[in-house]
Figure 1 (cartoon, rainbow over the protein chains, first blue to last red):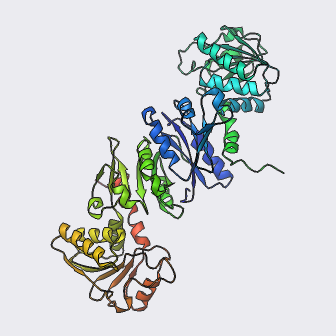
Figure 2 (cartoon, each protein chain N blue to C red; figure 1 turned 90 degrees about the vertical axis):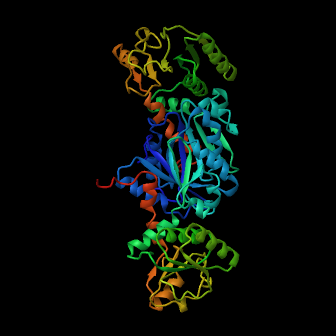
Figure 3 (cartoon, each protein chain N blue to C red; figure 1 turned 45 degrees about the vertical axis):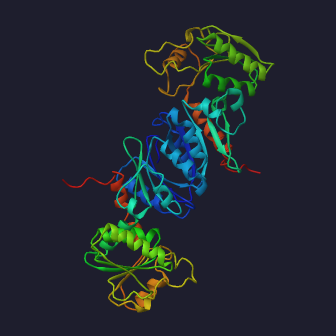
Length: 267
Length: 267
């Protein structure tokens, strides 16, 4: 039960009805005896600045998660960016500092990498193909780069966006071999759909999964359906597959650590 | 568990750690299968305007309770006042309207009257002595007046405040016999401590309870301790007593009805 002493956490988005974060966070708080509650906060785009000023004025609000469509704009409103927040130009996690200010970071990509790690896959020295060049693709690209990826191919229907993301990754990680690709993902250890294609039943695939090498791990950022048509096609080809939900599951502990709520490590 | 679809309710105050409203509301929501959650929101006085603008920008926030020290200032910030909000000049309950605006009302006094009703006491035709002339005293005076009280005596250490409250009650309810009293509560059906005296162990009584008629019901607005020293003294004198907690208990159903969350009445 929520007491008067509860610390507040939130997830802000438009819409928010579909989000799982309150369930995941509140289960964590209950499990670890933390007197806190996470609530969904629905903020429409034209109210974002006013709402964020209001959140800052709530003295017992210690942090919040940011989901679509606010990730990029919140990066421009918080007091400072850390981690990949600056490089990606978007944040999904904001915490309150002792001085009352807000610090944002971007954990989507790190959650994706953590999810892969739980499945036994590490990016060190690997070559990665990403379809897409938006927020999810950027977050994943930078997190994989920070975790030791050797080669990155981006493909996007808007080549200028893909080239721009490649240039930003190259600027931060000059040793990574980068290339703008085609719809053909062959020759990579990991191929990721980081586009919204697959949300609708009639969507085309974002890349030619039928050309993927059978040794390529094919991964998704989409969470509904759990196994997208792209993943079904990849599995039919003999590829190992990795569902989008693992990106979220991998983030919970990262978020809790960022909020200072991680269980104490064994000394 | 709090889902993404949850509607939000809050209690705002400074401090808020002591409030019981989230426990009471969330138990009600659970009991009635309402997908909503009530959280404590700590707002310092210098952040009140910013925080309220932020609350208005939260599209799934449907209402909030106001506690000290914000009741009077919130009355000046909301879009309109109904019920006793205007007369008392303070609100403790604010709801969202369909057009997004905020409407405030004051239910403290009505909660007090509802608590008395549950104890079998009605104000119709009765004479009432109230010690105090602040927010609680005003709310109680207007609610008792609206419920049929015939005669009102106010006593306050600051006579101008007591006189002002009496004048406001008289303006709204001209038929009520009003008088500024002394520390002596004798000759009344009900005597109420509506001051903060009693919160501290060394506080003097707000009125001379030892002069109360044994037939007088002696009531409190203070909730801690549940039975104040004043109530103990009244009981020792043979008076029936009425604890402050009943004012809050009496309000839950009034608040839910105001929010449109009351169980459907039998047709």
